Picture 1 (spheres, one colour):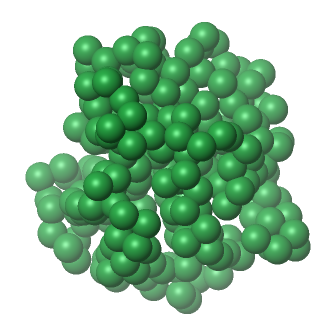
Picture 2 (cartoon, helix red, strand yellow; picture 1 turned 135 degrees about the vertical axis):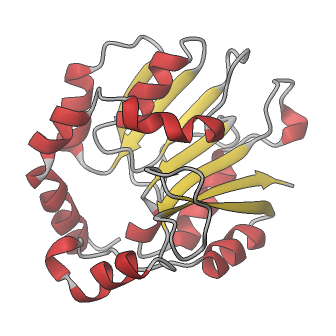
Amino acid sequence: MKKQKIQEEISYFNSQLSNMEQEVFNFSKLRVYSKYFNFDNMKDIEILEIGGGLGKFSFWLADRFPKIKIISTDINDTLIKKANDINKYKNLKFQCANCEKLPFPDKCFDIVFGVGILHHLPSIEKTVSEIKRVLRTNKQTNKQTKTTYIGIEPNFYNLYNLFRIKFWPKEKTVNERPIFISEIRNIFQKNDFKVNFEFLFPRFPSIKNKILSSCVNIVAEIE
């Protein structure tokens, strides 16, 4: 990611910091995602979040599953410093990192996840390659989980999401662009992942319609 575009992304999210702070420990809206992040009866698994911002999802997971270890990363040093200041969980750490070049050794995490990050990236290919590199394979772990990437992205088959990103420039960041299932599937499959998708409307979880749903869940397992 070019330095100028990185700085523009950082500046945008820094301008949203006060709003993020007000909501960071309000976990009630995240319960709808529980089925995708179900680590009951698991311990000692190691999880990496990419593009975590102020870490709301990681705070939620650390609160729900105190026996798992989480590292939440973001390229924005201001957000990482703030997240470290407010972090009260022993099983959660924050670290500044670029998801296109992660500062971790090979095969050191059981699960990687990202919420609303892929559609901000100029090179999803580099990030997926890094996700694969840092994930253990299923043969390398005896833990009760498959090595997996879990993602939640805006659904750009939803016309509101598509129009917002194409025609309302004040509502998007410099790198934000529409990405569709076909692109995501191709990139993950090239990196030996088996990919499944599910459409979701968080306010009305029973809605799974491709056009009406506001977001799409990605579950990509290393084959």
